[in-house]
Length: 248
Image 1: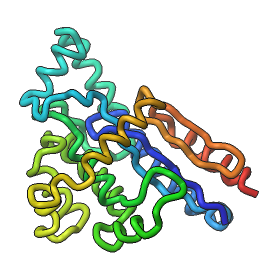
Image 2 (image 1 turned 180 degrees about the horizontal axis):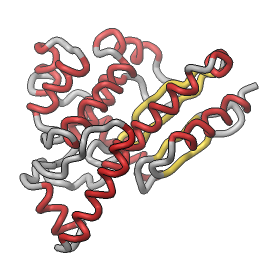
Image 3 (image 1 turned 90 degrees about the vertical axis):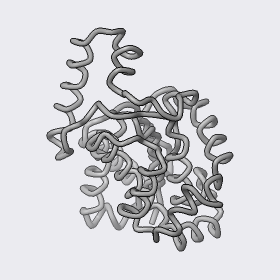
Image 4 (image 1 turned 90 degrees about the horizontal axis):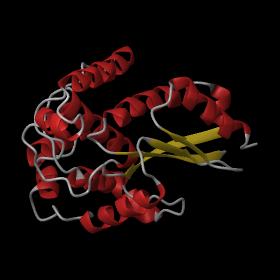
């Protein structure tokens, strides 16, 4: 059986990546439900860090005001149209209504925890011992997926800060299922710097190859397939099926 890594390059404050992650999840579920496909290729989802703005302040109290000023050049009609468009894209996917209020801020600490919980590296020659250790202690890739989903939901559905200590603790405990004591060590305690240098390095490496998110890279036996932008579920399914066909 061929094992394919699906790399999802994203930032937790990008609504396009939220929508793309939901569609990619649906495509993976559809392909995995087919016995022939499941017997031919195993697809494992991994997250790679990308920051829309690495120099973004830790906290910007009013996301809507910042977006109006910096993204929409003071044009309130343009901002309302953009928000309505994004909500219209999210609604058919079963996502809660997107919010564009509340605080925003730098996402580096969120990315640090995603990589730490996920374990291993972005390369196909992962350190097996490191990856196994992450699975044993934090939950590994499945836990990382719950972490990402929790971060998206709190930011886009609840208007929470994307990487505050409060947000990160809540997601680690309630969504990932880590013991509160461990979660506090990772967020506010002696382990709060674990993986910080590594995630900065990974984000810089990713930014050398990618200038927009979401980007999905599907490893194949013959070639890798790259899909940039939020594609339709059918597009992701087609790419996954291509990898399956070319794995024989």
